[in-house]
Image (cartoon, rainbow, N blue to C red):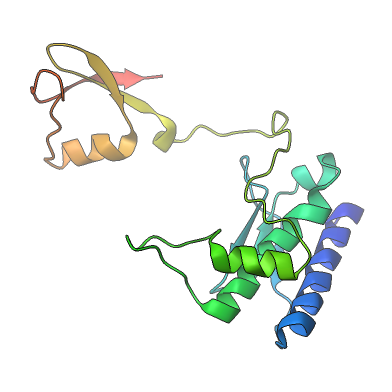
Length: 173
């Protein structure tokens, strides 16, 4: 484990201690894993009580330790205080009012997205990243793998212009 990773884990423990005192809780320290990939800096898994952090970004970004671990701790604290918050449509509010309240109580700015330079991070193209070309009589469009799979299972998508059903043309690189 690198010095920055040790410092990030210490920051996680520090903010758990702050949350315990500010909210009168007795939260245990979450497990911290260093196996996050892609451009995501960190993720909190509330039910497993763990935080995943990006091993490359912790080494390359100056404010990673000050921003990302506390952000993820705020998710765990929000979950322990309020449970899972949902929108009227049933989606989980990851960065809703409750999370923003916790961030402010921890003395943090409730930013939800990082601006780290991720150009050095390898981004694997998966099958989900492929686009599938479909056509009707008036145009050609790209479907994601999810929509393509739905077509393969029998779903039909119509063009909003000519009202024809889209037909599969091929895979776009």
